[in-house]
Amino acid sequence: MECLDKDRASLLAMAFKLMETAQKERFRLKVYKLLTEAISSVKFVDSIKQTGDQKQVVA
Image (cartoon, rainbow, N blue to C red; front, side, top):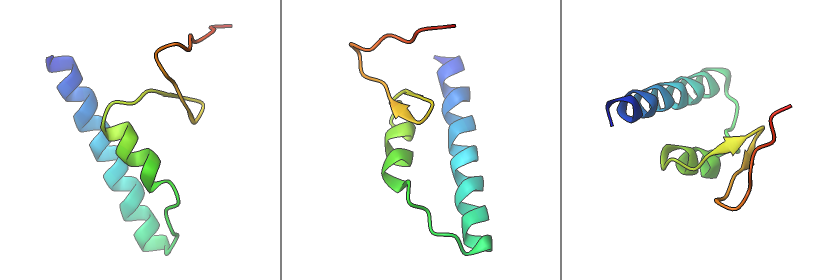
């Protein structure tokens, strides 16, 4: 569980920095829904949400 806590902390730090940069640059974040899913541990591969029945192919 300790590893998951570190991953979650890293994710939250990256999300915070992204929002902070967007605010400074006056960009509008259009991915707020994806951020909430990412924070709730939904897996994404190449910006595509992965579900339990999808398997990642490694080339």
